Amino acid sequence: MKINWTEQAEADLKEVFDFIAKDSKKYAHFQISKLRNCTKALKKQPYIGKRNEEFGDDKVRELVEGNYRIIYRIKSQERIDILLIHHGARDLKRRMKKP
Image 1 (tube, rainbow, N blue to C red):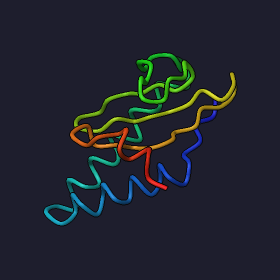
Image 2: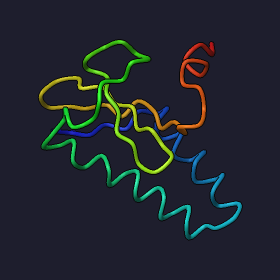
Image 3: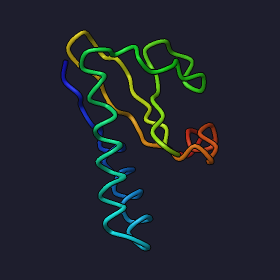
């Protein structure tokens, strides 16, 4: 099973890093490592995450790591796409409506 990080997910990781790094680069690196490591379990258990209600698609699921939601899509038996990293305190539906 291949874990594919989309451009949006990579951009989200950078945004998370930059925000946390304002206070601590050490903790920013630690948080990014936690987010990336959390997705490794998907290689053996792609359905471990709960179904994501905002997308309304059984193939779109999410893992939670700390304050962050890791939204992913099961593309096939060989590939999972990490779609985005979203802070749990923010409104995901509002984000999805952006052009």
